Structure formats: structure tokens, C-alpha cells
Amino acid sequence: MRREEFRKLVAERPLLLDGAMGTLIHAHGVPIDHCFDAVNVENPAIIAQIHRGYIDAGADIIETNSFGANRFKLAEYGLQDKVRVFNQAAVTIARRVIAGSFQQVWLAGSVGPLGVRLAPLGRVSVEEAHAAFAEQIEALVTAEPRGVDLLILETMSDLKEMETAVSAARSVAPDIPLIANMTFARDDRTLLGFTPDRVAARLSQLDVDAIGINCSGGPAQVLRLILIMRQIAPDMTLAVAPNAGWPEQTQGGRVLYPATPEYFGKYARAFLEAGARLVGGCCGTTAEHIAMMRQALDTPGPSELPLPEVRIVTKEETMTAVTDQPTQLADYLARKQFVVTVEMSPPRGIATQRMLAGAQMLKEAGANFLNVADSPLARMHMSAWAVAYLIQKEVGLETILHFPTRGRNLLRVQGDLLAAHAMGIRNLFVVMGDPTRIGDFPEAMDSYDIVPTGLIQLIKEQFNKGMDKAGHSIDQPTNFVVGCALNLTPSDVEREMKLLRKKIRNGADFALTQPVFDPQAARAFIQAYEDRYEEPILPLVVGIKPLYNSRNAEFLHNEVPGMIIPEPLRERMRQAQNPQQEGVRIAQEILGELRPFVHGVYMMPAFGRYDLVADVLDILPEL
Image (cartoon, rainbow, N blue to C red; front, top):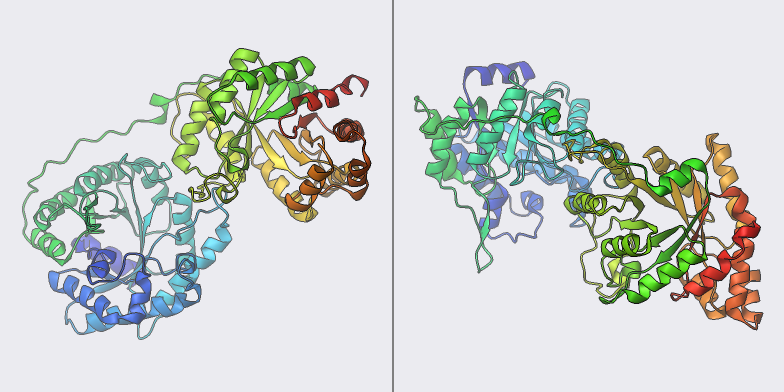
């Protein structure tokens, strides 16, 4: 089918899509954790039976069983080399069923999300995503004996991923009809926070033939959202395929969907009145749901359901332009005043007196900021937010809050940013965080939605401009100062420089480095970076860690990734009569060599020995 034919067809009459595929595969006894795309090869009769049921119910368009048949999703089952096999098998099965039906039915290739986050929120580049989509789509359109008639790009929550999928489809099949469907959560936003008006505005600018909504909640929500999309993109062909309501899990583990076929039949006409030209179902819907929708579409008359009134709230109505004063750290960096910050770990219980006493001593010793670690070594501690707040309130020192991305989804990341700002914590050190497997609870969730480079960009380019990830107002701009991590003596200098360059381009204000024990190598890295990119490196707050004794030095060198302590220093610690004081002297020597090249020092005490940190800082007036 060519694009002109598709557009003419939907202008003449509404088309009925089919319903769920995964729901019915599972109903045929396939375990929920099995690869449903593999069923095309393992038991094609199941897929053929599902297709036949939808055609008998009156569907004008059926979709291939290929929703997750991309290299990333298949890799979860070790089947990443089966992309072509599974997609072409999906087309072959559907074509055979269509040929035996003697009805006019079109075949749509189902292309779902990759199941990974695209950069900068994740580690998959746009180029890698484009290649994965192109690989799957090429298999669908070239399958024997005849490829698909159109493509449905569906159930996506990331507009960037949708744009990439469209681009890939057009690179493979420039004249194939494309339907671009996004999915929404209970709050009427996608999982990445995009509202239907923004989705419609973006999708209508893509080279597609229809836009719409699938999956999401039940028909009531989708009807409301599609009305908003019609206001924003009145000239676009609209498609809807809602779930059969929000799923409910029974005590026996079964997943049930509450919306009945009769309920879907009533909403079919309402969808038409709302402007949809393609209607169908998604999760939880069956051939019975599609049959009732067919009956409704074939019976002229007004909808029994009144269309809800919808209103789009503009950004100008919600945005309040208020800007807070810069933090003291921002002022120090701007005036090139030397930063002295010390890392403190939150207590492992509820008592804070000892920690606050240590903070007061460090202030008196010359520290002008304190770093508050968040679950260091993945061990359970008091919330870093509470500690940072108490230090600022009780001791009067600004804090730099460690903000790991590991263990937080995108919703929590943004909520935590708002909480930190509301508590007056405005200096952040963005890191990946320690893996839970090394800590107190190795079985704890260890996933993340965003990598440090992406979080830096989110804070600097959106939160600090008054917007969340989806571009919606957060009432006023934040004024976070954002630091990134850096290893000045890495094993792979080229990789570290490229990563630093990316962090700088995404908006990092300063860098806190890993402990430096080889100042000459650190200076060489700084010079190499500035020579490579022909620009000054960002403000560096160099990590200094006083060695405690010989065993501590050997442990750091041999067991901590990225920590290299030259043999001469380890020999000094082995021969030292007073190891702690020798560690202080080494730290002072390193600080003295690096002082002209950095903007501050980031002290990391061993075993909570803040007194040794204070001894190191005694040298600062002489530098």
C-alpha cells in the first residue's frame, strides 16, 4: 500500500484495527516471561489462530506479532541474532491467514520501543537506535512472499525514540504508510513526562501519515487525550487503540482487564466523533472487543457518550519567573576563590551529634564547603538530604550533595531534585553511584533511567530554566550548581577526555576528581585535554586522600578500581614510623604540586579521621 492509497482509504471510511496480541499469546499457555516474538517460529499456529479471530471479528487491519522483535529486546532472551527470522516469520504467518480469509485486510508491521533509554538519558546512541529500528523494519517490509502494507510505531513514551523510529522507517521504506502511536500513564503524561498537547505538536511535524494513542489506560482516558491531540493537530489522521482499562492482578497471579466488549462498542462511536479514523484495542482486548467495535462502526448514528470538555493549559499560565541568588559555591567558582571541601558520610543510625561536631571542627580548620555522600559503598545510611540540610542549618557551611543516578527512576530523580532545592541544597555532585551488589543489600534494585551526563543536561538545560524533563513548568527555575566526576590519572586517557568533554558540553560547572597520587600524570592530563580541545578545562576541585597506613595504601592500589598509588609512595608508607603523619605529608606534597593548576581541594578522610584532614589543610596558608 502506498501512502496516497492509505490516506484516500481513511478519508473514505474509518478503519478498524485488531486488538491485543500478547494478552492472547499468554492466554494460550505461553509463560509471561517467555519471548512472545519467538512463538512465530516455535508455535506459529497460535499466532495464526489469533489473527484469524480478529479477521473474523471484522478487523480491517491486523498487526504482525513483532512488537518486541528488535535486537535490544531480543537480547534479553539471548536471541538478538533472530531479528530477521522472527520478523519475517511474523509476516509470513499473517499473510497466509489473510490469503485464506477472502476478505480485504491490510497487514501492519508492529514496531514497539527498543526497551532501552536513548542518550543522554541512557547509554544507547541515536545511531545505534536508528540501526536497530532499520534492521527490524527492513525485515518486515521485505519479507516473503510480500512484506507489510503499513507500519505502526507504537507504545512509545519517548518522543526522541519515536523520531528515531520514523527516521529509520523512512530510510528503509520512503513510501510506506506510518502510524505513530504514543502511550500515556495514569497522570495523562508519557512515562518520560510528555503531555498529549506536546506529543501532538511533535508528532504532527514528523513524516508520518497518522498519529495517535495506544495502550495507556481505558477508553475514557484515551478519548480525553485524543480530543487534546485533535486541538493541536486538527489536520492529522488520528488513531486510537486503548487497553481494556487498567490491569488488575488477582491473588492467583492472573492479570485481568475490566473493560467489556460492550463498553468498547460504545466508545467506538465516541472515538469517531472525537476525530479518530483508525480505532482498535490494545492490552486486554480480544476478538470479542473488536467484533463489538465493528458492529458500532457499521451502525450509523450519534455516540451514546457525550464528549468530555478538555482545556490545554499553556506554559505561560503556569510559569512564574523567579530566580534565586547564586550559591556561595557558584560565587567561589566565578571569582576563582579556592574551594576547600571535605567528604562526610551520613551516620548509619539516627544520631547526628558526632557528625555535626566533626563538621564544626572542619569548618574551624578551614573547610568552606562539605560534601555529603549518598549511600557510600552502597551501605545503608541516613538520607543525604537530611544530613546536608542539618549541616547547613546547624553549622552554617554550604554542602555539595552527592546525587547518584543508580537506583532511581526518572520520576524519583526529578522529585528528589525538587526536594533538594526546596531544602536549600543547591550544589550537586552528579555520579553513577556504587552498585548495590557490594553493599549491605546486594539484592536491592540497581537499575537507573538516566546516566550522569544526561542528568547534568536535565538539570542545566531544563530544571535551571524552569522546566521538567517533558518541558513543563516547575513554577520557577532552579539554580543548581552541578559538578561531575573526573579521574585525572585514568588507565584510558582518551576515553576519560571524551567523557569529560561530553559532561562539559552538557553543562557541568566544575569537576570533583578521584584521589590523585601521581600529580605529574594529573598535570599531563590537564594539559592534554586543553591541547586537544583548545580551551581551558573546567574548574577542578582535586581529590586528596590521606593514606592511613601501609595496608590501607595496598588495599586502595590493588582492590579499588581507578585508584593507582605509585610504588614510591607505598614504600614510604611501608617504612613510616608514624603512618598517619606520613600520609598527611604525602597529601600535603601532592596538594602543593597541584595547587597552581586547580580551583580547589576535595578532601576524602580515611575511616572518618577528620583530624588528619585538618592536618593536611594546615599547609594551605603556605601555598
